[in-house]
Amino acid sequence: MSEEQSAEAPPVETSNETPNEASENGGFFDGKSVEQEQEGFLADKGDAESNGDEAPKGEQDNTDDKPVEYEFKLPDGIEDSEETQAYTNELKTMAQALKLSPEQAQALLELDIKAKTEGAEEYKAAQEKDEKDKIKAAEKAVIETKAALKEEWGGDTDKNVRTANRALKEFGGSELEGVLNEAGVLNNATVIRAFHKAGLSLVEDSSPGGAGATKRNKSAAEILYPDEKKG
Image (cartoon, rainbow, N blue to C red; front, top):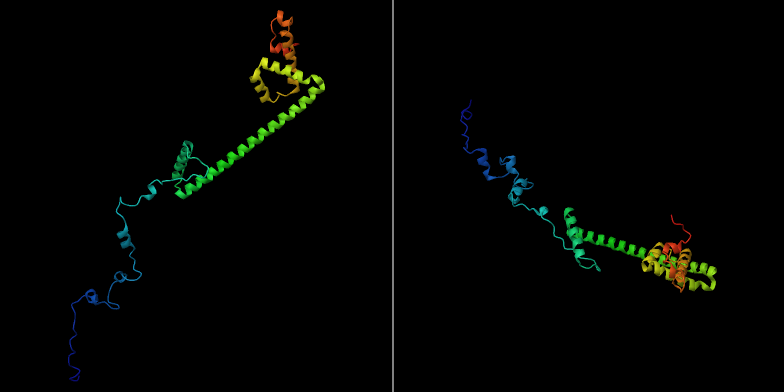
């Protein structure tokens, strides 16, 4: 072995620094752990951010638990009466139960009022039509009855009708007239004939020397149904 080869190699300097301490200078592959490297881009800081932003218990937002305040705007033509107030209060209760927003509750109010208004208008129109139909039917009945009585009584028709009206007034007045009218028989020829007959009996009983001077006045049933035998 040559003298040069036997020469000792220069001592290698060693460092007492640990790998982590040596990595403090930074740089590529500086010995940082994977966890330490996740501090820059794409670092998962979700836990830290959420922990920093999360409100302490008892101070969290309880917006969902707070009742929504509703201020309704009534459509044109709807008066702000006690009845309307009661209606809107009921609607508020329903809207809160359904967790509707103020806009949704307002839309519901407008839709409901529109439906009710249209329904009321349709009902009113139907009532008016029904009333007109009744009037037309009554007018037609009068024409038909007059024609039938005129054919039977001829020139005495008006006088006989007046006699029937006196009997109607005597035996029932406006109350009986209303009942007959409601039943749709006030202008019925058969009814008028019956009251004409009753009216003739009244005239006979009230005349001097008539039956009413010596006998009791007959009842309406006896006049209208003179042939009915007593049981």
